[in-house]
Image (cartoon, rainbow over all chains, first blue to last red; front, side):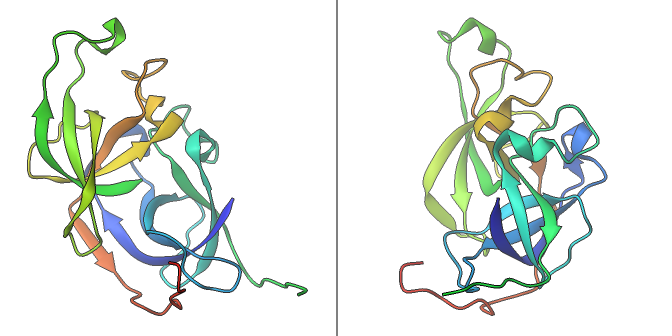
Length: 89
Length: 99
């Protein structure tokens, strides 16, 4: 799983049928110090996260597991909202 | 998923027999402001996308998660046509030197 910050939302009326009903969020991957790493991606939201929130997401075919359907062409989905991160340096 | 724009169609007569009937499109990667990036990808269409449309592409093993691409040699599939993109947070995340 990776940390990310939701920076926006994407609307798509036409999408693959099994993905209907799920919100899609723009996620900027970040490291544990809230610094951005790499390019933004689009992830399916399964828990009701919103812009500005720090979340963690799963990638690859595991991203289908949190959905209520057997098959969906989804390679990233948000599975948790981060309340706080505590790092001992 | 990544954001991209359909810039063309790929035709091929000789291909893996599992891929017969698939519609292949060339998708150019886009930045969030919809300016094109260098990279392109050949993706199987699952939603009826056309040239010029902004789409989302699922990559890797997830691309096999449609009824058509199941167990087929496909690693990129167009799974949505973008209507609108709303960027709420801009530059609030600290830039790193190597980002």
